[in-house]
Length: 460
Ligand code: ATP
Ligand code: MN
Image (cartoon, rainbow, N blue to C red; front, side, top):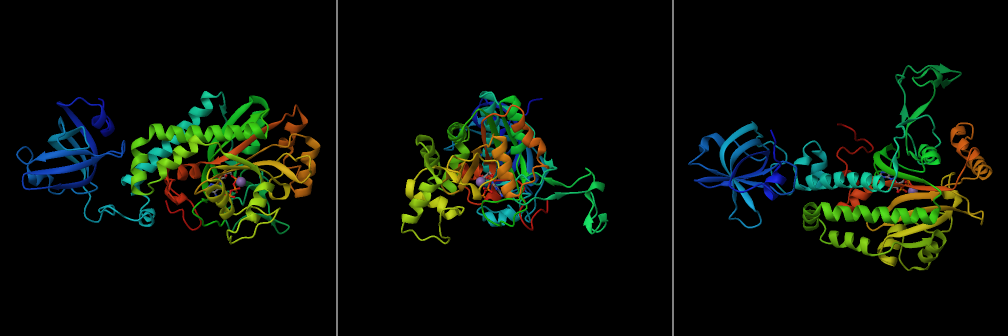
């Protein structure tokens, strides 16, 4: 039996046919003769209006139905006299799957996002989170489509990693030892007795393994969860987030920038084309410049400049920053956003950062001071992508690792790619939630992932 979604009923189903709709009640209002029930099943931001005529259905039978209840409604789909909807449903039969009493937390409209974060198990039932998670889905699908259509291989890199030298942030340990019963030899925990016979962690990035794939499959990408045990309680950081990491053999930094820009524009365009109703809702509800901003990103080239040029701009401005800027210091979010939002007024790609503030695997420039790094900076977000052309020369790579205290013996497998048939290559990491933030116009990263993980929060 086919079960038409409310999206289908609203947009496509033939009027004057008998249909069945299932969904959750958003509101019920009415008068002595009829009730109007707004029904939503998550397939669209729009509700199906169900008209309950007490001449056909006993008022007593639906008296208990309030916001949050779940119903199966059968009736005649008719053209709607009301503005803004093609059809409505004249109920002839209502089955109540589940009632929701007045303690249902989403009873009223207009809850704050903070309140809804505490009701994360039920917040899917709101217009806002319905819209956000439909957009999130569309973007995830578009990512796979983009890479598939461009000849990339989706590579599944491990979530549990034996290397703690990925160089991208603090890691969570993975162990089967009980906290108080770990075997100790000479005063240190003996991980040779642990599940994997060694110390293991949750991955912070799939890049190093991605490079192994690229050095054989040519064009690969990963799209999976990554974990960082940072105490960064910000609106742009999660302890568990999803990352997309393309890695491409024979690409240089220029190719890498072109890929990043083309990819981001493709995704923004995909959302504008496929999530129109949801984006219009978010545009109206939260940020009336959202759609304009998305269109602006599509229409304009990203501004490309070096880190050194950016430092000169930041030093020359009269704008007051909390943190001082100086060549060789990492840029803070406030600096990134100044460049994007005030100075250039468009997305920015910064390249050629000082080697000391970037990871060991980035290709050293001939100046000996900077590396072929690139960060893509977006309005309202700051860094959305971090990437680089990789150091493919064995000797230079080992020298960088030694200088930075990265253990070459542990990463022997990574170094093997440089020993056997090395090749220029480049890649980057796009933080999926930062992309969803940008496209939905939400301002807190905890609102664009279904179950956010951050310090002191992992209750369900
Ligand atoms: P930031 O400086 O913003 O903390 P980063 O330089 O540590 O980020 P990278 O290691 O370059 O981040 O990771 C690649 C991308 O992953 C970033 O550009 C960003 O979009 C995203 N990202 C990084 N850390 C987080 C996090 N804790 N939560 C959500 N997304 C993140
Ligand atoms: Mn980065």
